[in-house]
Image 1 (cartoon, rainbow, N blue to C red):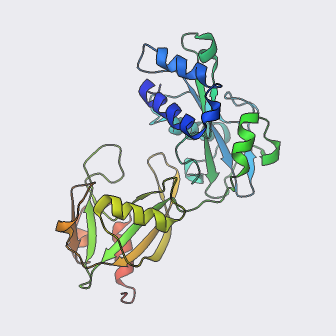
Image 2: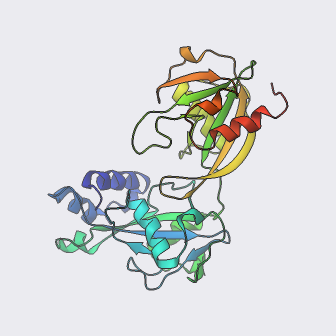
Length: 304
């Protein structure tokens, strides 16, 4: 079961976005605050939207009408991972057929009080955390789809109206090269739970709510991580990778010329930054896809 502190953080983040729902979720907050155990029972369900703006419907789902849902298991990394597992178990849709939405990312689109929040029955779920996913590609499933206008859950109807179902790059990375043809690589922390720990990789990161475009994302990440403010960014390649939950993560890689000294940068994440010529890069321990990106860029005409 999820950690109580993590659930309190999720609830606080959700209410910051939906303050008008504070009264509706008062029983959930009270149940979490009153819990005397580390783990708290919840259910986690999924709203899956395809490219035609239809919503996946599973009438027999335990989480409620139409939503695939399940209780967390010890093997689940997070409540969101539980929702991903529920989709696969109940519809056959693989995690790789799903991606996050730029509007909600890993934050629930809705939280509904569970029976445990009202009755305080030991072991009863105190809430249903509802996460939203787009389809990254057309999935194979026998489960039916319904028009977005037919959503029966009142608390969800308004929230899904503005979602278009179109997968978009949510991560951005930067191929930073200098006038000598070298590439700037970032040695990542050796820390559990992050992508490519202890590997050399490109600078970059994930979409945040204030980002309007992938270029906004990479400019913010470069500024925050290393104090780099590139004059010009050129979109180089869009690709798909899998995140830690097996979801498809669309990534846009940008290229930019920069002739600075990495030793003078105010690095806020990772261990260090260093220049490497393309011939040296294959000898490094690299994050997935980094070598291919550098080799592909090195074969393109000179840019400046």
